[in-house]
Every structure is written in structure tokens, then in C-alpha cells.
Image (cartoon, rainbow, N blue to C red; front, side, top):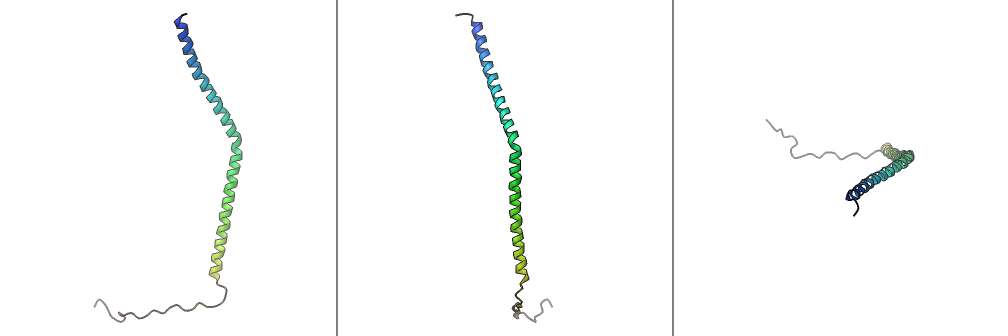
Length: 100
């Protein structure tokens, strides 16, 4: 066997190189992903604002329809007067004073 120190140094170098190489590849993938997201962010932001605008428009239309329905129901424009309400019936304790 030729010089065991050389073999040990070679194996240590391979282990360190593998670790550094995989960290470098991971960093490159992360940078590429960051660049991709950075380019698509304005499109996603525009889409989000569009969806918010659509939702608020729908809520506004529904609120206006409900307000109109309540106003129409409150107007009661048919002209017929409402029938009188029931009159209170006398109770059994009418005319009795309590406390003296």
C-alpha cells in the first residue's frame, strides 16, 4: 500500500469537496428560485388586487340590493292603512292596589 497519509488526505478532501459542492448547488438553486419568484411577484400582486376588487364589488352590489329591498319594504306604497293592533284585555288584578 502506498502512503496511507495520502489516502486519508484524499478521502478527507473528497468529503469536504462533496459537502462544499452540495452547499454550492443548493445556493445556486435557491438563487434561481429567488429570481423566478422576483420576476413573477408583480403579476401575482396584480392578480391579488384584481381578486380583491372583484370581491369588494360583489359585496357592494349585494349590500345595495339589500338596502334597496329594505327601503322598498319600509315604504309600503300600496296606500292601505294597517289594521289596528289587538287591544289589551283586562287582567284579574285590575284595580287592586298592592303595597298598602
